[in-house]
Length: 355
Ligand SMILES: Cc1ncc(COP(=O)(O)O)c(C=O)c1O
Image (cartoon, rainbow, N blue to C red; front, side, top):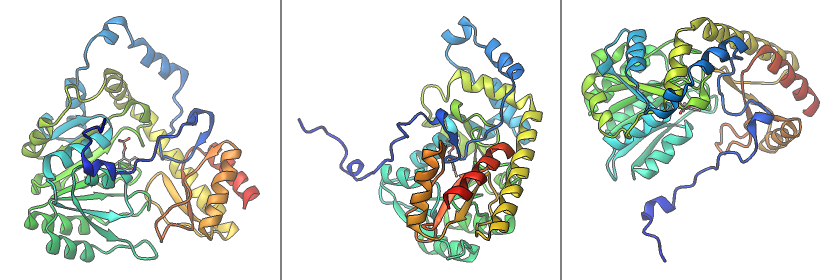
């Protein structure tokens, strides 16, 4: 039988999640936060898993309040989602009709392209220069010309690690407001880069900010994120929510992590230190890299072929990194997550051996 699969979905290519057991490797390929939780902390989490907890549907009220309070906002400014990814998908569901223009930086977070395909948007891509710079004037000209329904800007952006400065974000916010566009600022890498567009959501009702617990909060397994914005926009996003926004484990663990900011602050410090260490080692070796504002980094290894070769060699050494980028500007690069000092020392030792 010919299944009645929507035609446009047949064109969408999805990369399978790795079939390998990633836990058997040092994982430097997906920019997860890597805070090592103590046994004592794990015991606190485990104590929460009672039979009552397991058998009840999840409740998000207290987490939603806690997040809103941490942002200095009300609960109707926050929509809790299963990873920030689900918040991004909700924005496409609410704002993008077939044939609508959606503006993306290019390259950017892979799922933006996938959702544009699922919701049959016309992609308007704004590319980076050779040195990965991108001026706001170019973005604004594209917004004025194409009047996209939705503009997605990851800040810092992935995979480039670049940022758009706050003044420029405000100019983009103003031009997107005038163009009638919704501006989604994806802050997955907050607070590795501790500057936010959240302050603009009061001034511009067309802005939403997405954040995640997968990176700085080191809870990638739980799938938890949120969208913050004006109540009208949050209310619209809630219309497309699944029956339950996320699961009870994610809610509970997130609340406990938020109550223990020391763990997260220690992680942020460790990543900062480890990034400096990698930068100075690469400087000493004369290997170029791009400045990154997030917990990952692009290293220029000279050619696409070399990046593939290095990716394979690391895999044999039980270390996962990202290599073989298709984008013209990134083809020569590998990308690594910045983990602990110990993990980075291991990475540098292996890099010296495989180069
Ligand atoms: C820029 C960006 N946005 C969003 C996400 C999604 O994160 P999550 O769904 O785990 O919250 C990622 C994950 O890699 C990302 O790099």
